Structure formats: structure tokens, C-alpha cells
Length: 390
Image (tube, rainbow, N blue to C red; front, side, top):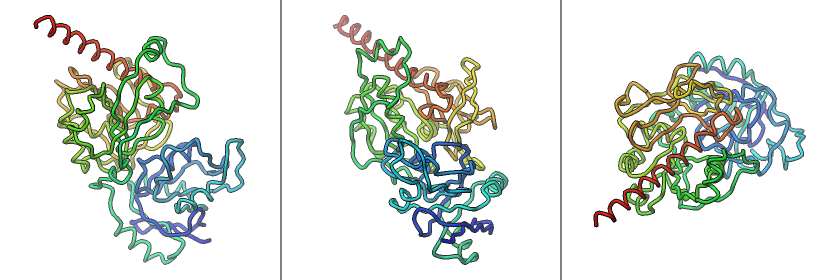
């Protein structure tokens, strides 16, 4: 069936619908990954977005039940150059098109995705609409202009869990852990509270592999509720939308700083920066792909990273006497990570669990465990000293 994609700047593309036949609006962005479309589609960080794949052939290995990053597709819509319905893979349980239709997600194929990507890179991410029910160009452009802008939107509440739950699923094919970490993991289970702003399942799997016993809580959980649980540490997850709009989370994180070790990824990184007095800003077209080079300033090594974010932290807004910048993006110089100089707090903008390196960034989970170990030893010494004084 014929379908159209219209951008708010008046550009209209004509193609064919696959998946659901409907009409959707969202922010049009692009992802440069060659594989992993199922993980991309189910990543909650893409909520409210129409995702364009720059790799031209999509769907050839179908879909399966194991590669989901959440319970369902999270994107608003999907744009590809050529959709391949006749999948071939021993793990596949169905076609991409049928799976999208099942979840009422619309895709469009047969358009010039190189041209679309160049427009987004030049003009910036724009609002758009894809439709198979309304093919009038003027109507579609008007609908795109009226759709919500991503800036100012709190989307975490749309993707977070509605109630706390525990997680104990390991990686299907876990990486070998460093010997020093493996020894501790065999004899210790760290109780970690995960703030779910749109958490990916593989983050939970990696934390579990490193000996963490996880309790995942809604994004609106208060600091008081977290502290009553008395966890060994707190993890701040990835998620969609404008970090500055998630004001309740920023306030809760402020109250948790200095109380427990904290590790943040993606939106969690941005929220932590805001809680520490920093600022965030919207990127022109964002970072979305599996080949972004990041420099670790602590050891001068380069990591190939997976990224998915449209906002970034302004490093100049962070207090250099308290915050140390640890990672920087080599493509555009934006901040990719920082740590507190005194408190057990660190975070990164990219996704170490996605493993494009493939193991370049897995050390971050080991760093979190090391931090938990140090804090546990320190707390034990404090208790002994207090007992001695009594």
C-alpha cells in the first residue's frame, strides 16, 4: 500500500507501507547501525521517535523473542530503504513486518534514506508524520508541524514500570568476567535499586552478571522510598525525552547524592549532571549508532561505543572542583562521561551493555562493582570504629 513521510520543513517522501497501515507522528531521527534493528525498535529511549535506518536492507533475518530490549516495540514509526519480508535465520520466529503489524507500529519503505539522512544532518532532527491513510502532502506537512516537539517532554513516565520488580536473568552469552571481579561475584550479591526511566534489558543482564541483585523501581519512586530499601548502590537507567523535563527525578537524585554509590547511563547520566547543578542541551541530530568513537581520558584509550541520545551534558556547567570529565566523543567533542572527585558517583552517556567493541566498555560494570566493594569495606571500618568508641 502507498504511504508517505512528510517533514515539518515541507519535504515529502513517497513509498510503501509495511507493518501496520495507519498514521503516526514523531521526531524523525536516523541510526547508522548495520544490524540490531530489533534491539533498536524495542529500546525505550526511542519512544516518540520515527527511526530511519541508514543501512539499506532491513528485515532479512526476521525477529525472535530473545533480542527484545523491552516488552514491545517503542518507536513511533520505522523508515527503511528496502524492507525484506523473506527472512532467513535459524533463530527467527517471524517476519519484521508481521511483528510490527502485531504491535500496531507503522513502517515505510522504498524512500531515499540517504537523502533523508542528509536533510536531518543539515537541518537537524525534525517532526514528521508517516501515513497510509492520508496521502495529501499539505495535510501531512501541517500535521507534522502541529505534532509535539521532543524538547520539554518527559517521556520517562510513558515507558517506566508501573510497579517494582526483581530481575535475575543473566546474559544468554555472558562475557568472561575479570578474575578479580569473578572471585567477588561468586561470594557476594550486591543489592542494587535500578531507577527505570526506560531501562534496556541487557543493562539488567550485565549488572546481574557482575553479581548485582536488582530491584527495578518506577521513575517516580521517591528518594525516601529508595533509602528505606537500604540498597548497596543505585543505578540510573537510560530513557527517552528531555532530561530537564524529568524534574521529579532530578530532585530525588539530589537527595540520594552522597547517601549511596550511584552509576548512570544515558538519560541517567544527564539526570545526574542536572542534579549536580549542571545543564543539558539538545543536539542538532543526536548520536544514534554502533560505531561512535569515545576517548577515555583516564587512560587515553579509545572505545567504539553504541549510542542513542538527542541531548547532551554541557561539561562547562559542571563544577570542576567536584566533577572530573572522564570521557569525550571524538566526532564532535561532546561529553560522554564524568565522575565525582570525592563521592562514589560516575556515569557515561553511551551504552556499554550494547557491546559494539564488543568488550571495549564492559569495564564500567566492573568499576561499579569495585566502587560497591570499596564503600562496603569503608562502611565496615566505620562500624568497627563506632563500636570501639562505645
